[in-house]
Length: 132
Image 1 (cartoon, rainbow, N blue to C red):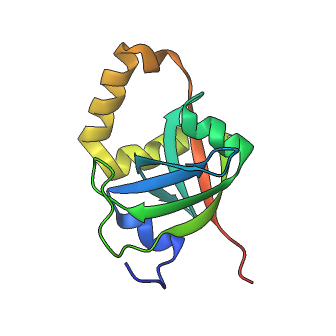
Image 2 (cartoon, rainbow, N blue to C red):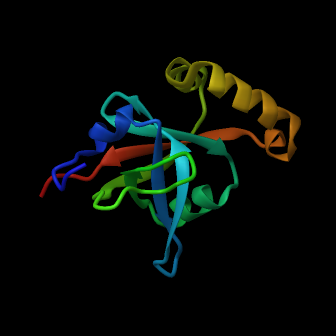
């Protein structure tokens, strides 16, 4: 990825490192699945997670391509975006199911059997920052 990478260039990645910011300004990075919905990127997560709480306090985030474990390649330039929390809908769920296929269904099946499966899921909608 170059310094000219746009938010939508990340849509084809399997994983990105999503950095959200505490009220102190300290960033917290989490590897997430990412998908495209129109001109935005979306991330699915259980409601009440740390990233959801941080986004509600500060809607700014950065994203960079990463491995499943969150390792960002040397020289990768993060892309900034504005994040809002929206309810998960069948249409948004289908976007992830279409992109990640069996691994998405397997992950959701495992999650439903665990503690996290008791919480409703939400979607983090990441929009490009306005051009200046």
